[in-house]
Image (cartoon, rainbow, N blue to C red; front, side, top):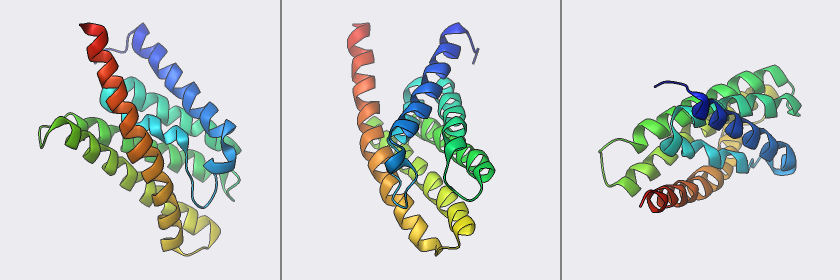
Length: 167
């Protein structure tokens, strides 16, 4: 894929949106049950591909600079890595032919939720000394809300708007 001006602009928009949503909603973005509304942008990689992948990865890095965790560097690097892997998986699974389009989108969202839950939950458990299962549960619930519910709805609406605008 060529990274032209349009894709660069989209990446910048996703980066800014992700970072701003985390910062504005920091009260729910850095808690035990992290309902990171910004994570709803991760499934949009199904629609936009690389620009969304790049945007949520850099947006996560920028947003996690203000993380209250004991190691901001860990949150910046591993949180961004989780977003990168989650958005690539959502994108690839969302475009597979394993089931109907709606089902593959949902499976893509679920794969993203699993990656974010286990990556972020694991390093936060190590950093805070809290039980692993508690972090997995907290991050998992928040990720289901943001990625599987909000993100899936965003993919559906965006795809519908794309089809409508083409015809």
